[in-house]
Image (cartoon, rainbow, N blue to C red):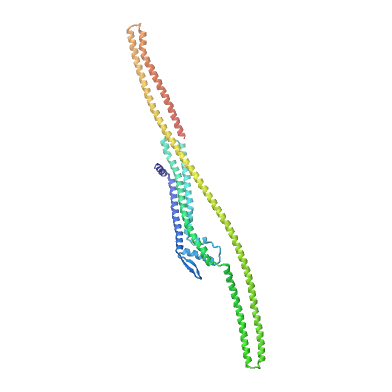
Length: 476
């Protein structure tokens, strides 16, 4: 519970920069959540519309079936793909057709959702750098101005500590926001890939096979058209020649039955018919020759078509090779970007650990200074109490010394007085006897005074040591 309370306290002690950074990151997270939900729901609706579509027979082939889409976007995608297949386009870019018919707002929101995790990390790093900069500048200002007491120093350090809390919390919230947004993007990509896989499979493997024209179909159509036109021309020529021949024969037969005398005329007519038939035969040679020319043209067209097919295949192979190289380069670039992103994440983690270690070191130093100051305060208070006791003992010693001196004066005066009254012979002995007690009191008072002086000297040394420690703390 203490750890949780410390974490909450650290979050609440941020400065205004920290709250602004956390608020911006939360706004980015909310935008990412909204955009992800919209785009994901769009792809899920398209997939559901595809699954709910009805299979119908193709108009020109009852054995083949295609889907009847009720969704306008899916219908537009299928129509564009069908048109490309009917034109004979083999390498159809299915992804471009899908993106062209999807709502542009969805694509824009998807792109924004993909860059929001990077924006979250960037905002966290900016907050970290600003917080550390403000903390360093304010700490430098506090240390350069100096402090009068630990209470003032603690109050002055509230702002740098708040800036450091802002630095750490913006990074923490930024990283957490990036993780959340990346998880949402993973779900979005999964929904998109599910739709793309199902719909591209339908377009490439079902719809393409129905409407694409093979080389055999193209060649068959061409030959049907060429042979059809040739047979029509040949039929017209034969019909005209035979009709003319029949009309001539019928006419000559009628003339021969009418009169024998017109035989010569009929013979001449027959000769005319023969000559006309010769002309008809010559007319038949012309379409035959035209047929031969058509065959030559057909052979040339076939050769050109084969060359075109071969060149198309070569171009397709070259484009496939270039596409494969582009895909390999793209894969390499993606792997390089992935490695760079991993390196950046590792660097950010190292920097975060270094900043965290610096913060822990600063807390340890601050706690050590705080504990040392508390110990110094206790030592100083003890020394002050000892100093007060020493002064009181010194005062008692002085008072005792003064009282002893006053008593000594009285006793000396009394001794001299009594000695003068008694005998002059006993004056010196009585004075010595009477002076022994005051002299002992004087020696005791002198010893007490020396002890008090030594105590005062020790207290002075302790006081100078305390001042030295205070100066060192001030310099720190």
